[in-house]
Image (cartoon, rainbow, N blue to C red):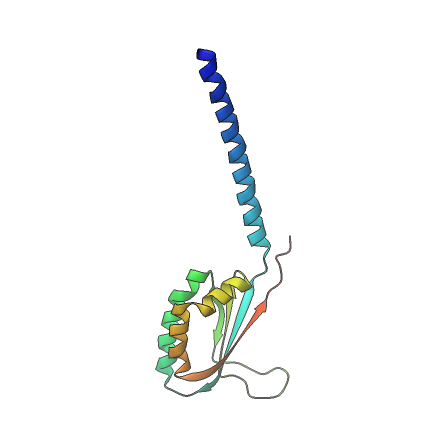
Length: 139
């Protein structure tokens, strides 16, 4: 009777081992795939100011709380911009945001919390937001 109990236990342990190895391989593959996705950058241009600067300061406070939820952060924010080439006015204020992927940037932009914050931002200016795909990480 001892041998009957022991054989199924060995099979169970073997099956659990195979399942653990399979799960680890799947997680590693998923992580590698996510890491190989190129980052996305969102370029924000304030084209025109239509309200007091305090509106943009209020929006900035909200954005600082929202962005990390989507894996994003500011790379640059500036009111001192210079045109190096081309024609047309230089936007008074610009920002560059980095996201882990285009999909993350889209989720952020379409999120209810960002849309509510965007209404505040838009109440004090006219903007243009462009997302571009970054270069995949060189390995």
